[in-house]
Length: 296
Image (cartoon, rainbow, N blue to C red):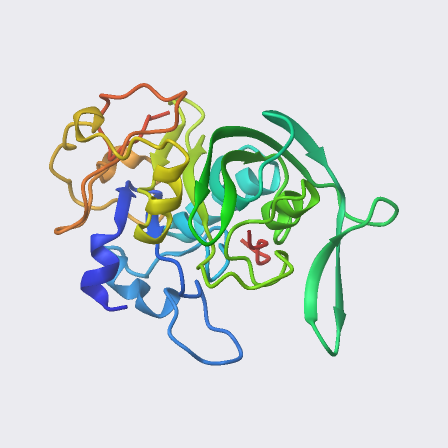
């Protein structure tokens, strides 16, 4: 990962927040192994602000898609409250091994963290002492993948934000996420097929929420096509945003001070989640810190 790679993955930008298309296979921040991570490159995302942005939440190393950053401390505090109160709507796409018996449902399974010397740490269902964890899901397609067998394309909306929530909840359906080395019970040689597809943030009370959509990563395309996905349709992409204005001072929370804009070389915007209205400016968007958040 270098600065050009990071700038090319900028999906949305205003005076308060940035949304990145996080690639699978890289951590969002430094870990014990001291390998590469996104956070070490955030200085390239200042865009005239005095300090680099900070993580408003986290995604697992192997999860791709929408990652929200706060551009200054005031914005980061506001985003932290929105995530903590469950006011940020998240849409995930997963390709799972096997096929659910139903076409939709609600998983209400509290989770707790356990660890042992052999397997390390993981999350498990715990109806007695676990933290409340709720996910709404529906099947968007079914198919068959050579070498894998029956698979399904799920759309999932987590109502809580527990560590590994979607991965454990899919396992509870009997359909673990394809490529999951922890919860699939076996290694199938595939990377993790989990995408933070869209995120909706009510960043300003007087404006419509901002919805941003991430493109499908290359490693998930074949499986999604096998389940009936039609691919990204360029005809539905939003028009380009207006030219960026001068960045707002650090304490300014008015996104108009820095109009939504991709960085030079950023990929084209992608259509918003199904409920969003296409055609508005802002990289597939609809207008509208504290502790480390969990990973999905």
